[in-house]
View 1 (cartoon, protein in one colour):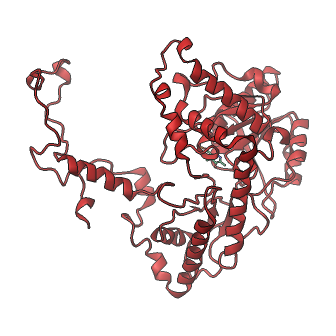
View 2 (cartoon, rainbow, N blue to C red):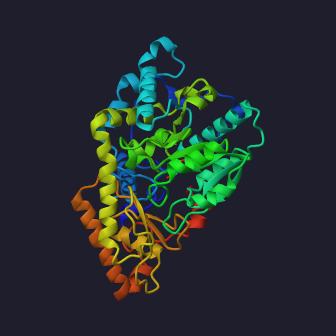
View 3 (cartoon, rainbow, N blue to C red):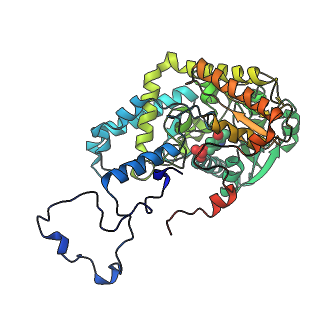
Length: 461
Ligand SMILES: *Cc1c(COP(=O)(O)O)cnc(C)c1O
């Protein structure tokens, strides 16, 4: 263990401080001005350390984590594309950061103009009519969108529509949002080629169906080629189509959900439009609607205190930077990169669906596994300095490894990743134990993930 791997509490020495200020106003001895009843009985147990210890503590902590700024992050379904630093610079302009949400409207016209411009830009990219910027995440957008769907049916007196159809490959938030919205979920099966089975869909459609939730390309990274027929079937039965836009990346500038027949959708600005995400930080899941749903959009179109405005700004900077001609390169490069990795590794890893993919694809474990699991492969990747892909999702396969390289990676990085994945496949044959016990050189090895998530130890005892 390195000296600075110690907790900051373990470095503490009574009386050591990181600053000294003259007591100009005699404040040090002044009694607190709040009610005595809420005074602390004992001083707060804070570590007592010097400035250099604090700096090293935080700098070392920051290096124990993995981020898209430290390495390749092929986390399928999450679109961990690099976030250009110019987004940060623009979002950090003092005219934006100094805004107060309670300022008079006449003094925040610039910020409101950004919302209006984003509404236009996203409408152009998606083929929707208008967007609301209220939802703060993709799942929040799904719930908002489903509530709009319900409003639409209610307004027509169509109160029997209580069910929503969700494909078996759907992201878990889709059925979860439908359940929170009070809708019942009907699952439609996928065919062996990974696409929604139109024949299985037909008998599910009827006067009790509020709509269908789909993502396209779907969670396997495959474009739903029958989408036009699906849209017609759902509309003919009186339902609406909801588009989960988390997979919009490969379609940017190429194909629009509005043209596919979708009525309501969300975008994950924090995925597709390159604003930082992960770790539960701020996000933005604007919801777009077609003409017939526009009357049900709530007013105002932003949430309390104008939503996560910083995220909107970053996405706006990204869209402006690429512009109409270049934005379509993002999806093409993401698709090219994913297919390149897939084809380069399919002789070592099981590829359950061998067709051309969009921005991501799924392996189902090693070709010759020798008892080596997908978890072992993911953990071993960390030893080589790559973030692990998404694993054990989607649930259609038992050893799923879902890889999404994104368009921001160079050919050299993709080649380095491919070489390491091949090396791990060799190691799995020669020395499976090496993989069972990986990772070997990260600060933490294999925590019990359930306990770590449910009973995290977050304070020094
Ligand atoms: C990430 C994701 C979501 C949920 O988005 P959040 O912003 O994490 O709430 C929904 N659907 C798909 C396909 C996703 O990848």
